[in-house]
Amino acid sequence: MTQPRGSIVVVGAGIAGLAAAQALRKLGYAVTVLEARDRIGGRIWTDADGVDLGAHWIHGTEGNPLTELVERLELPYGYVGGDSSYTGGFDSLTLFGPDRVAAPATMKNRTLELADAVLHELELRAELARRHGDPDVSLAAVLDEILAAGGYEPADEQAIRYHLNVILREDVAEDPGLLSFKYWEDGYRVYGYGDSVLHGGYQALVRALAADLDIETCSAVSDIAYGEANNPVRVTTSKGVYDADKVLVTVPLGVLKAGDIGFEPPLPELKRRAVERLGFGTLNKIALHYDARFWPAEQYVFGYMCRETDRYPTVVISMWKSHGKPILVLLLGASLGREMESWSDTEVHDYATTVVSDIFGTNVPEPHKISRTRWSADPYARGSYACIGVDASPRDLDTLAEPIGDRVYFAGEATNSYHWGCVHSAYESGLREAARIADDPALHTPPATETSRRQRRDIDRMKRFARMRMSHYSFQSLRDRTACLSEGVDPFGVRLFAPLVDADLETLASMFDEITYTPGDLICREEDPAHGVYVIADGEVEVDFGGVYEPAVMSRGAVLGSHDIFYDARTTTVTAKSQVRLYFLDHYRYKTFLYAFPDVMMTMLADLVSRWEQLEDVLDAATLTGALRLLKPRHPTTGQ
Image (cartoon, rainbow, N blue to C red; front, side, top):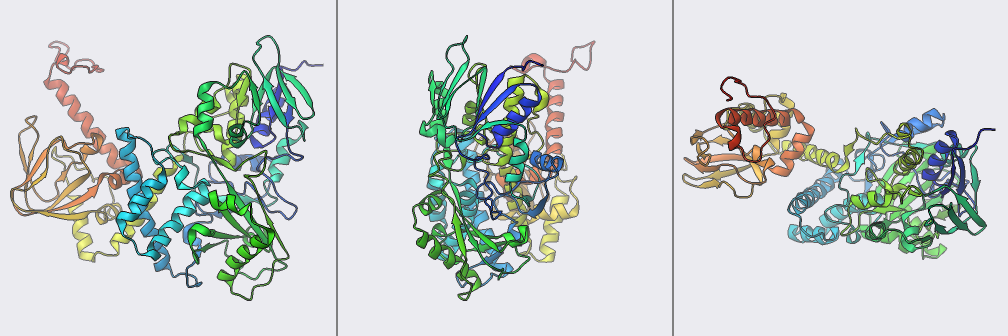
């Protein structure tokens, strides 16, 4: 009989624990999984009616490792679209406003434009705060400043808060007052567009992963002793004691924050601090079960903006579209979701049926059953998933993931700094720790090709902003702007926008504001903070390079300050020589444009490299203090 490679205890039968246990079992380890509940899956829980009470979607279907897994296991799933925050996609959402009528496209899009402006300002401020090393504050503090400065009408502020609740309360699962302004989604990566659901519920995936594993349910772990190097790690549970060579802890962050598991010796101080700083949000659901469907069969998500958005859900999800079941599901996150846990069944009924009646009319039938979740009250969850609290950062997730010696390991969505809070986050972390325990890198490939969620949102907002601006320009005006950019050269003769086709030039041209100057006006001064890029539409300016180059007079089409984005400061002084009309685009939107059209960025970088090489040719290498000359001299005989 083959001897096992070693003994492993896995604490928690959620997807992180099951993924790790299965991988290690196949390598020949003796693995025991301990689960406190009387069921497996953790916050994956599909009830008898097929409702996923916890994890619901495969977020970002294309490229997601869960997609590959369910296909390999031959589990049926269906694509429902969307981008995680806007389940099913905002374009496809039917939005009901205060008049209880489905909003026309113009009104619906206006709500998004209002929110885009606030989110743009928020990200602009956050980027500057990160760059300057400013102290962290709550996300709410900055949002309140932006909203107050905007002077919005009540209806417009409600529309903005609706979108903020979609993104924060119902996706991040926490209130902005408990989220880090600087780092709430810093570095968070997403897979391809579009969400999917499993037709048999997520429990089908859990059952498949649990096949052939030794799982002890109703075994709540109270203590883990790992201090004596020559002795096994000892895990004490409600059903007995287990000894193993190594232990993998996959319990939710909420359980660690509550101190429900004792460690001997105590966890390292850095890990304890990370546990304290990180946030742990809540996302609850109310499911209304009907005898028959009375809503449109093909609509997946209904947006709800009929009442005060901070007190009501943002969406109602139809399980008819995805599962063929006459069930409507409401999402309630953060403090609203936690509050709902204390409501009586009557209060839940009245609240949920009011939402349904607002959308579909007062004559809708009564549900024959209403079910709900209480994740923050669940002692083995104490919430739903991790978030970045004030003064925390994604580095705390990495700290939480660090093993203690080669004896205690940690997995779960709160240990994944690529994308915390999702099923794929937990799944990947389980494989990561299995690879670490077995010293087998083939078990886990870190994500490398996804897009930053902030970057994707910025690009989406930039494109929506461009489309909105295009609608305000006449054909001739937009054509003139586009022609100006197509002629554009920077002070060094580089045609920055040459790689762009006409449609892309129109996108960029539509985003610029107009500014005018009179003769002698200072447009910008060298070393002053840089906030944007200029393009001359009419008139002439003088560009002073601070003595590095001869001053230059530039006219229509000249691009000024494009490289200042790399320095956060002006590299030239520009003065108006005549009446001047300039196009101006702030650096944040310009940078976002460069994300979407990297050919322009490559042109800018190639120009910088070319000028650096010219500088090396002119100056002796010793003059470039602190610089390492990487290339051999071009003229070996002269050393120049």
